[in-house]
Length: 163
Image 1 (cartoon, helix red, strand yellow):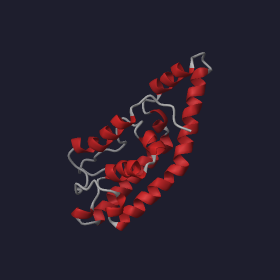
Image 2: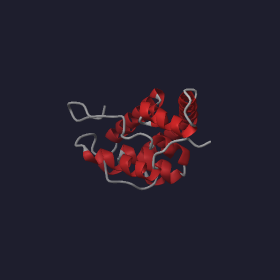
Image 3: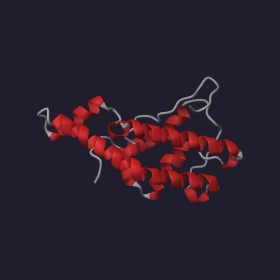
Image 4: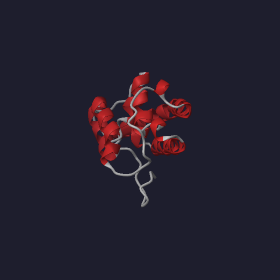
């Protein structure tokens, strides 16, 4: 079943693929934006594990989100009003699930750790490995979930490292 959200997935893909370019810092990466098959074997394995994680986190986020919508409906709202009410409380919709936020942060930092061990030309920007490759794989449900996020739940520490 598809997640009930109101966001534009294409705009979400564009936003999340480009947002990290707005900050200075993080591990230097190549400008690689090709498919997973052309990436270093360590990054291919990373993507396989990341995709597999969605098998657990997607249904969990979906159940949680449906529960939030149902709670809004019990307050006498129509289904559409309930979705809007849930979004007012959780701006990232189903991607607001704390465990999902943890999942995204964990894999972003894991990708960064792999990149640090590779030569510059083999490094792949985390947003490519975590979003573009999902798009390429045709994982529309997963792409819909992650693009609910208005931004990546990561930051830079005082040394310019992803945290």
